[in-house]
Image 1: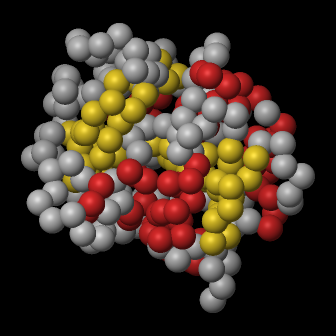
Image 2 (image 1 turned 180 degrees about the horizontal axis):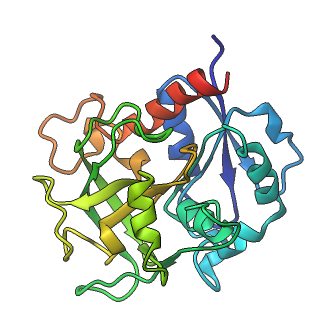
Amino acid sequence: MRKPKIAVLYFPGNNCEEETRDRCIDVGMDAKIIRWNSKEKLSAFDGFIIPGGFSYEDRVRAGVIAAKEKIMNKIRDEVRDSKPLLGICNGAQALVETGLIPGLKNKVEMALAPNINPLVSGYYCAWVNIKNINEKSCAFNYYSNKNEITEIPVAHGEGRFTTKDSSLVKKLIKNKQIIFRYCDKDGNTKDKFPTNPNGAVYNIAAISNKQGNVMAIMPHPERASFNWQLPNSIIKNNEKANGIKIFESMKQYIGDKVI
Protein backbone atom coordinates (compact mmCIF):
# COMPACT_ATOMS: atom_id res chain seq x y z
CA MET A 1 0.00 0.00 0.00
CA ARG A 2 1.30 3.46 -0.89
CA LYS A 3 2.16 6.03 1.75
CA PRO A 4 -0.66 8.43 2.67
CA LYS A 5 -0.10 11.95 1.33
CA ILE A 6 -0.66 14.77 3.81
CA ALA A 7 -0.91 18.48 3.06
CA VAL A 8 0.28 20.69 5.92
CA LEU A 9 -1.46 24.00 5.23
CA TYR A 10 0.60 27.11 5.78
CA PHE A 11 -0.99 30.51 6.44
CA PRO A 12 1.10 33.68 6.95
CA GLY A 13 2.22 33.69 10.58
CA ASN A 14 2.12 29.95 11.25
CA ASN A 15 5.37 28.65 12.75
CA CYS A 16 4.90 24.95 13.45
CA GLU A 17 4.55 23.68 9.91
CA GLU A 18 7.98 22.02 9.67
CA GLU A 19 7.70 20.07 12.95
CA THR A 20 4.21 18.96 11.97
CA ARG A 21 5.38 17.80 8.55
CA ASP A 22 8.27 15.93 10.18
CA ARG A 23 5.96 14.03 12.55
CA CYS A 24 3.93 12.84 9.56
CA ILE A 25 7.10 11.62 7.89
CA ASP A 26 8.24 9.97 11.15
CA VAL A 27 5.19 7.68 11.14
CA GLY A 28 5.53 6.71 7.49
CA MET A 29 3.40 9.25 5.65
CA ASP A 30 4.42 11.60 2.86
CA ALA A 31 3.87 15.21 3.83
CA LYS A 32 4.20 18.52 2.02
CA ILE A 33 3.77 22.10 3.20
CA ILE A 34 1.13 23.79 1.05
CA ARG A 35 0.75 27.58 1.10
CA TRP A 36 -2.66 29.16 1.55
CA ASN A 37 -2.54 30.57 -2.00
CA SER A 38 -1.23 27.43 -3.69
CA LYS A 39 -2.80 26.30 -6.97
CA GLU A 40 -1.96 22.68 -6.18
CA LYS A 41 -4.88 20.24 -6.39
CA LEU A 42 -5.93 19.27 -2.88
CA SER A 43 -7.67 16.19 -4.24
CA ALA A 44 -4.22 14.63 -4.63
CA PHE A 45 -3.86 14.47 -0.82
CA ASP A 46 -5.31 11.89 1.55
CA GLY A 47 -5.43 14.13 4.61
CA PHE A 48 -4.75 17.63 5.89
CA ILE A 49 -3.24 19.36 8.92
CA ILE A 50 -3.40 23.03 9.89
CA PRO A 51 -0.44 23.66 12.23
CA GLY A 52 0.05 26.07 15.08
CA GLY A 53 1.39 29.61 15.14
CA PHE A 54 -0.18 33.03 14.77
CA SER A 55 -1.85 33.20 11.36
CA TYR A 56 -2.35 36.80 10.31
CA GLU A 57 -0.98 37.87 13.71
CA ASP A 58 -4.19 36.59 15.35
CA ARG A 59 -5.85 39.85 14.38
CA VAL A 60 -9.57 40.18 15.19
CA ARG A 61 -9.62 36.70 16.78
CA ALA A 62 -7.16 33.83 16.61
CA GLY A 63 -7.75 31.76 13.47
CA VAL A 64 -10.64 33.81 12.09
CA ILE A 65 -8.86 35.27 9.05
CA ALA A 66 -7.41 31.90 8.04
CA ALA A 67 -10.91 30.46 8.35
CA LYS A 68 -12.15 32.94 5.73
CA GLU A 69 -9.50 32.08 3.11
CA LYS A 70 -10.73 30.45 -0.11
CA ILE A 71 -8.61 27.36 0.47
CA MET A 72 -10.79 26.48 3.46
CA ASN A 73 -13.80 26.08 1.18
CA LYS A 74 -11.77 23.56 -0.81
CA ILE A 75 -10.71 21.81 2.40
CA ARG A 76 -14.35 21.61 3.49
CA ASP A 77 -15.19 19.84 0.24
CA GLU A 78 -12.24 17.45 0.57
CA VAL A 79 -13.16 16.31 4.09
CA ARG A 80 -16.91 16.14 3.50
CA ASP A 81 -16.78 12.38 3.01
CA SER A 82 -13.96 10.78 4.98
CA LYS A 83 -10.57 12.45 4.51
CA PRO A 84 -9.06 13.44 7.88
CA LEU A 85 -8.30 17.01 8.93
CA LEU A 86 -6.33 17.91 12.06
CA GLY A 87 -6.09 21.44 13.45
CA ILE A 88 -3.38 22.03 16.06
CA CYS A 89 -3.52 25.16 18.27
CA ASN A 90 -3.94 27.98 15.71
CA GLY A 91 -5.27 25.32 13.36
CA ALA A 92 -7.82 24.32 16.00
CA GLN A 93 -8.89 27.94 16.30
CA ALA A 94 -9.38 28.12 12.53
CA LEU A 95 -11.49 24.94 12.50
CA VAL A 96 -13.80 26.32 15.18
CA GLU A 97 -14.11 29.58 13.24
CA THR A 98 -15.11 27.68 10.08
CA GLY A 99 -17.79 25.73 11.95
CA LEU A 100 -16.17 22.41 10.98
CA ILE A 101 -15.74 21.88 14.74
CA PRO A 102 -17.97 20.78 16.34
CA GLY A 103 -19.84 20.72 13.03
CA LEU A 104 -23.33 19.91 14.31
CA LYS A 105 -24.82 22.93 12.53
CA ASN A 106 -23.78 24.87 9.46
CA LYS A 107 -22.49 27.77 11.55
CA VAL A 108 -19.98 28.66 14.24
CA GLU A 109 -21.17 27.06 17.50
CA MET A 110 -18.20 27.57 19.83
CA ALA A 111 -15.33 29.93 20.47
CA LEU A 112 -11.75 29.63 21.61
CA ALA A 113 -11.77 32.51 24.04
CA PRO A 114 -8.88 34.20 25.88
CA ASN A 115 -7.35 32.08 28.60
CA ILE A 116 -8.53 32.37 32.18
CA ASN A 117 -5.28 32.02 34.07
CA PRO A 118 -4.22 33.35 37.49
CA LEU A 119 -0.59 33.74 36.45
CA VAL A 120 -0.63 35.71 33.21
CA SER A 121 -2.99 37.66 31.00
CA GLY A 122 -2.72 36.36 27.45
CA TYR A 123 -0.17 33.91 26.09
CA TYR A 124 0.63 30.94 28.31
CA CYS A 125 3.17 28.19 27.61
CA ALA A 126 3.50 25.14 29.88
CA TRP A 127 3.58 21.35 29.98
CA VAL A 128 0.22 19.85 30.88
CA ASN A 129 -1.49 16.47 30.82
CA ILE A 130 -4.44 15.33 28.72
CA LYS A 131 -6.27 12.02 28.63
CA ASN A 132 -8.14 10.20 25.91
CA ILE A 133 -11.69 9.70 27.20
CA ASN A 134 -13.17 7.55 24.42
CA GLU A 135 -11.53 4.55 22.78
CA LYS A 136 -11.22 4.71 18.96
CA SER A 137 -13.90 7.37 18.60
CA CYS A 138 -12.24 9.40 15.83
CA ALA A 139 -9.44 9.37 13.27
CA PHE A 140 -6.89 10.60 15.79
CA ASN A 141 -7.21 8.29 18.81
CA TYR A 142 -6.96 4.84 17.20
CA TYR A 143 -3.81 4.06 19.18
CA SER A 144 -4.65 5.79 22.46
CA ASN A 145 -6.10 3.58 25.15
CA LYS A 146 -9.11 4.85 27.06
CA ASN A 147 -7.95 7.14 29.90
CA GLU A 148 -4.36 7.03 28.63
CA ILE A 149 -2.47 10.17 29.71
CA THR A 150 -0.25 12.20 27.41
CA GLU A 151 2.25 14.78 28.67
CA ILE A 152 2.06 17.63 26.17
CA PRO A 153 2.74 21.38 25.90
CA VAL A 154 0.22 24.19 25.47
CA ALA A 155 1.28 27.51 23.96
CA HIS A 156 -1.59 29.88 23.29
CA GLY A 157 -3.41 33.00 24.41
CA GLU A 158 -6.90 32.04 23.24
CA GLY A 159 -7.33 28.36 24.04
CA ARG A 160 -10.48 28.24 26.14
CA PHE A 161 -13.18 26.15 24.49
CA THR A 162 -16.46 27.84 25.39
CA THR A 163 -20.05 28.24 24.20
CA LYS A 164 -23.23 30.08 25.16
CA ASP A 165 -25.28 26.99 24.26
CA SER A 166 -25.71 25.14 27.55
CA SER A 167 -26.88 21.99 25.77
CA LEU A 168 -23.99 21.79 23.30
CA VAL A 169 -21.42 20.25 25.66
CA LYS A 170 -23.96 17.59 26.65
CA LYS A 171 -24.42 16.76 22.96
CA LEU A 172 -20.67 16.53 22.46
CA ILE A 173 -20.31 14.16 25.40
CA LYS A 174 -23.20 12.01 24.15
CA ASN A 175 -21.74 11.90 20.63
CA LYS A 176 -18.25 11.09 21.97
CA GLN A 177 -16.91 14.17 20.19
CA ILE A 178 -14.81 15.32 23.14
CA ILE A 179 -11.62 13.38 22.53
CA PHE A 180 -9.03 14.69 25.02
CA ARG A 181 -9.55 16.45 28.36
CA TYR A 182 -7.03 18.27 30.53
CA CYS A 183 -6.11 16.25 33.63
CA ASP A 184 -3.44 15.96 36.28
CA LYS A 185 -0.64 13.36 36.18
CA ASP A 186 -2.98 10.83 37.81
CA GLY A 187 -5.78 11.39 35.32
CA ASN A 188 -8.03 13.51 37.53
CA THR A 189 -9.93 16.15 35.55
CA LYS A 190 -9.96 18.91 38.15
CA ASP A 191 -11.57 22.02 36.75
CA LYS A 192 -9.02 24.41 38.16
CA PHE A 193 -5.59 25.79 37.32
CA PRO A 194 -3.03 24.38 36.62
CA THR A 195 -4.82 21.12 35.68
CA ASN A 196 -7.08 23.12 33.40
CA PRO A 197 -4.55 25.60 31.96
CA ASN A 198 -6.97 27.97 30.24
CA GLY A 199 -10.40 27.57 31.84
CA ALA A 200 -11.89 25.49 29.02
CA VAL A 201 -15.42 24.22 29.66
CA TYR A 202 -15.39 20.56 30.77
CA ASN A 203 -11.57 20.66 30.62
CA ILE A 204 -11.79 20.24 26.84
CA ALA A 205 -8.44 19.94 25.08
CA ALA A 206 -9.67 18.44 21.78
CA ILE A 207 -12.97 18.04 19.94
CA SER A 208 -13.88 16.11 16.80
CA ASN A 209 -16.77 16.49 14.40
CA LYS A 210 -19.58 13.93 14.66
CA GLN A 211 -18.19 11.87 11.78
CA GLY A 212 -14.82 11.63 13.55
CA ASN A 213 -12.59 12.65 10.63
CA VAL A 214 -11.92 16.24 11.78
CA MET A 215 -10.31 17.18 15.11
CA ALA A 216 -9.27 20.45 16.74
CA ILE A 217 -6.65 20.12 19.50
CA MET A 218 -5.13 23.03 21.42
CA PRO A 219 -2.00 21.31 22.85
CA HIS A 220 0.89 20.46 20.50
CA PRO A 221 1.36 16.71 19.82
CA GLU A 222 4.19 17.40 17.36
CA ARG A 223 6.21 18.67 20.36
CA ALA A 224 5.45 15.61 22.49
CA SER A 225 6.08 12.77 20.07
CA PHE A 226 9.48 11.51 21.24
CA ASN A 227 11.19 10.92 24.56
CA TRP A 228 13.84 13.55 23.85
CA GLN A 229 11.14 16.24 23.65
CA LEU A 230 9.71 15.61 27.12
CA PRO A 231 10.91 17.91 29.92
CA ASN A 232 11.28 15.31 32.66
CA SER A 233 12.67 12.43 30.63
CA ILE A 234 15.77 10.92 32.19
CA ILE A 235 16.94 9.22 29.01
CA LYS A 236 16.93 11.55 26.00
CA ASN A 237 16.58 8.93 23.29
CA ASN A 238 14.41 8.52 20.20
CA GLU A 239 11.80 6.37 21.94
CA LYS A 240 8.27 7.36 20.99
CA ALA A 241 6.11 9.36 23.38
CA ASN A 242 2.31 9.36 23.44
CA GLY A 243 1.91 12.45 21.26
CA ILE A 244 3.04 10.51 18.20
CA LYS A 245 -0.04 8.31 18.47
CA ILE A 246 -2.20 11.09 17.05
CA PHE A 247 -0.17 10.97 13.82
CA GLU A 248 -0.01 7.17 13.82
CA SER A 249 -3.78 7.08 14.24
CA MET A 250 -4.23 9.44 11.31
CA LYS A 251 -2.13 7.13 9.13
CA GLN A 252 -4.10 4.05 10.19
CA TYR A 253 -7.42 5.81 9.62
CA ILE A 254 -6.38 6.77 6.09
CA GLY A 255 -5.36 3.18 5.38
CA ASP A 256 -8.72 1.92 6.63
CA LYS A 257 -11.04 4.60 5.24
CA VAL A 258 -9.42 6.60 2.46
CA ILE A 259 -6.89 4.60 0.44
